[in-house]
Image (cartoon, rainbow, N blue to C red; front, side, top):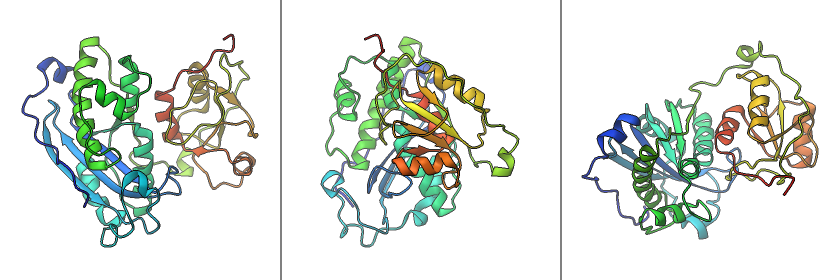
Length: 321
């Protein structure tokens, strides 16, 4: 295992008014991976810190994970192939991890990235998760309007006076994020801000269950923001991004389109080289939009991942500017 300082129990509970406003148990999570694409890359380390609703540590667990392939950017996460020689596979730890997360708000910094990888790993292993919601501390920090040039974990941690010991180590990142979360909850309660909780589907619907949803054609509504280019995996979706929907959805397509337009996205009806993101629950379907996305290298996410991105839209550049 990597050397680290385990998270100590935090003796001071959060104030009663904070707990009353946000009465959730939490699971603070971080994963290290072989790359940035959740559909192709794999988890090499995962760490979890369980918190009570009043912000005290209930338990902590971490493990290296054998990805069955090269560990990827060792210079970033410090995990070598030799270190993974006797590590369990994700399937080996999936049941334990699912139990640790069950019934808790999953908290991560850039949660769509961490949850995207966990979601894919759970699917591969056949294990079912029981996570009701996730909370992205990047999105929460943005709502708190922190006076920072960017919202990296290092920058947000420094703002709250939390020292990092080993960046990009899942154990140390969860220790740091635990303290960041506690400080953020206090500030959110003081500002009267609701937490940006994203609900998660427990069991994705089958195509037969989705069949009654009729796909809609997007109205060509002019977008007020300039095109920032393609969405980058692991980063926020930016206003002005050209988004295309394909196939059946659990939420009526009309609602997804309306919310996307309201959020400042440029919803298109066809995929081209300028498309920033394709949203589909059937990424292996041989339909034109999916085939065109592959042809042009357009990133693809499912509806659940898109919902998470939609909750954390980053400001774009207005066209008049």
